[in-house]
Image (cartoon, rainbow, N blue to C red; front, side, top):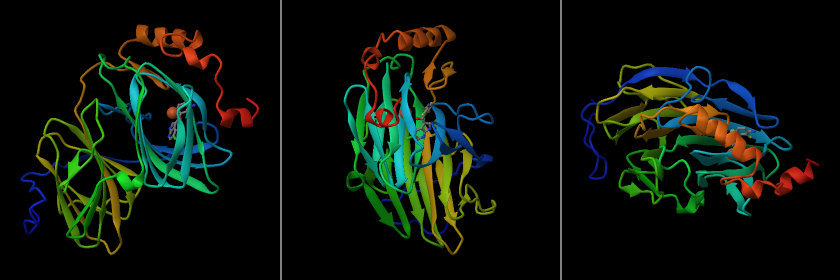
Amino acid sequence: MPKGSGSSCSAAVKESRSVVRKMLARTQHEGVGAIVRRSIGGFELRHFDPFLALDEFSVTAPAGFPDHPHRGFETVTYMLQGAVRHEDFEGHRGTIEAGDLQWMTAGRGIVHSEMPAEEGTQKGLQLWINLSSKHKMIEPRYQEMPSSDIPEAEEDGVKVRVIAGESLGAKSSVYTRTPTMYLDFTLQPDSYLQQPIPSHWNAFVYVLEGKGVFGSARSPPVGAHHLLLLSPGGDGLVAWNKSPKLLRFVLVGGQPLGESVAQLGPFVMNTDEEIDQTVEDFANFMNGFEKARHWRSEAAEGFGF
Ligand code: FJE
Ligand code: FE
């Protein structure tokens, strides 16, 4: 166990969860010319309830994610570098810049484009969170937060940006329809962290930068682009930066839904029949996709689609 008790804000973890699976996210093509490192949602790990996908994306114009639909879940886009311009079929639009968050509840249907807004390479994380059967067809909703509105806390060489949930006394105002925590940690060399996690939640770490030791002081250091699935049980996570460089990782946890998952690309429902219905709704501009009939994004028009 780590030495010292920290200050009043840092809650002690009695028994850390351990790492039960480690996966390197390899690059693949997605959208149009975009590159993603998909860790959850790929062939090796279809889902990790309630999480459907985790993409570390990298896009340079003219590549991007032009007009496409979503139904039945939420997409959480957290920018690390550059900016992404989004437009949807209801006229909602904006730019997600480095450090900004877009929490999009697609619900019954969103059609949108997500394209580079700047020169150079735009990087970020996109997490897909499933919605329970009773929330899959809710009205679409956005929660958007510029970087300056994301709560931060710092203590003993550990900095956290709280995307969702609570850490080191800082709390996010994002409403998570499926109960979720999402924390962006930066650890100075020779620092360590204790973070409580609700005991029945599934939780994972994704390393962005540097090397970290997770779960047990004796476990081997893990570098960037690795996904670590944490064991069930325990009351949280202990992590160390034993390297001479900064360590940055996200810790994400969520309450499992325990429901069946039927997925066809960006449509995620509970049954094959509901997927068939969704394909029909999208093709016929019904049940939430009405506005898709006459809509093209400006980004797509620019390409002559
Ligand atoms: C897409 C399915 C998709 N990963 N990471 C089909 F999911 C997407 C898509 C994305 C995406 C977007 C961003 Cl900003 C980041 C992502 C998949 O948009 F474009 C198609 N055609
Ligand atoms: Fe999308």
